[in-house]
Image 1 (cartoon, protein in one colour):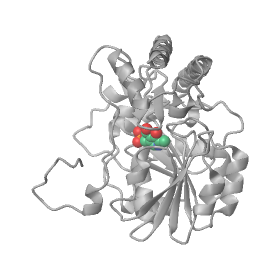
Image 2 (tube, rainbow, N blue to C red):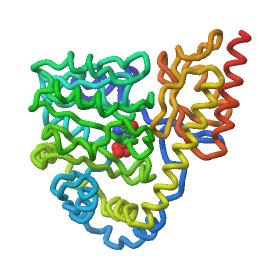
Image 3 (cartoon, rainbow, N blue to C red):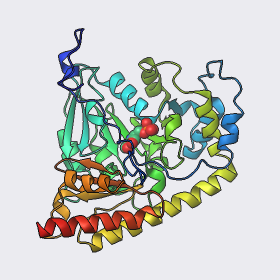
Length: 370
Ligand SMILES: Cc1ncc(COP(=O)(O)O)c(C=O)c1O
C-alpha cells in the first residue's frame, strides 16, 4: 500500500510497510509491450478451441485435474500425485513460504530476483533474507549456503534469474544442495526453463529425484503464452504439496485454464511450441549481441528477456535505469526499469528488436552528449 492512502480500518504495520507487487505498466500508445516477459505469439494450435469447448463454466472445476497432472508428471518421471497445480506458479511460491516459514523463521532468495520474492513471507511473518547476486549477475550460491541458519525454512533459487538472465549451473546446484540441511525446503523456480539453451544449466527433471526437499516450479504463463489464464505447477514430494494445499486459496485453478494447459501439451501443440521457443531464444541472442556491440555488459541471457545493468554501459555511457525506461516509454515501448539497478527488456515480436536497439543507441548518444 502507498503511504498516501489513509485506510478507514486498522491493518498490520508489517503489511503496510511492504510495497505491493508492481505489474508491468499498461501501454498508453501504440508500440511494443516488453515489460512483463510475456509471449508475443498467438495461442498454440488447439488452445482457443479447447477454451471455447468448455460449456460447463457454471460449475466449479474438479480440483484434482488428474489427466493434466499425469501428463506433467510423466515429463519428470513421477506420478501425477507429485504434481501440484495453482493459479500461476507465484501462488505456489506463496503457499510454500507460508506453509514452511512463520513468525521468527526466515527464507532466503537472491537479489535482484523475481520482484514477488521479498513479500512472500509477509502475511506469515517470516523474514525475507536477500543474498546479493555476483558481479556477473548470477546467484552467489556459496554466499546463500553461508546464509542458511537454524531459522531458514525455505531457499528460493531462480534459474534463469529474473530479471538478470543467467542460469544456475548444474555442478553449482549439486554443490549447493550438498550444503543445505535435508529438512530445509529448496524451491527451484524455473518459470523460464523452456528458453534455456546452455547445456550446463540445471534442469528440474534431472535433479528432482535426488532431493526429497526440492520442489521444481514451472508455469504455462511464459513459453506457453497462457499468462492471462493463470496456471502453473510444482513438482515434488506429495507431502510438501499437502502442506501447501492447507494454505492455498481454494478453487483457484479454473477449468478453462486446465483445458488450455492440456491443449498446450498435445503432440501438435508441442511441435509448434518447440519452434516458437527456439525462435524467441534466437531473437534473444541476437538482441543481446547487438546491445553488447553498443558497449553494454548484458549478462548471460537465458530466458525471454535481456538485462541492461546500470553500471554495465560503455565508459561515458552509464545507463540510468529510469531515464532509459522513460526514453522507451516516450517512443511507445514499455520495458521494466529497476531503479538504481538496471532495465529488463522482454523479447517480443521480431520487429521489436531493431526498435529496442535504436532506442538504446539514441539514449547512449544523448547521455554521452550531456
Ligand atoms: C521467476 C518467476 N517465477 C514465477 C513467476 C510467476 O509466474 P506465474 O504466476 O504467471 O506462473 C514469474 C512471473 O513473472 C517469474 O518471473
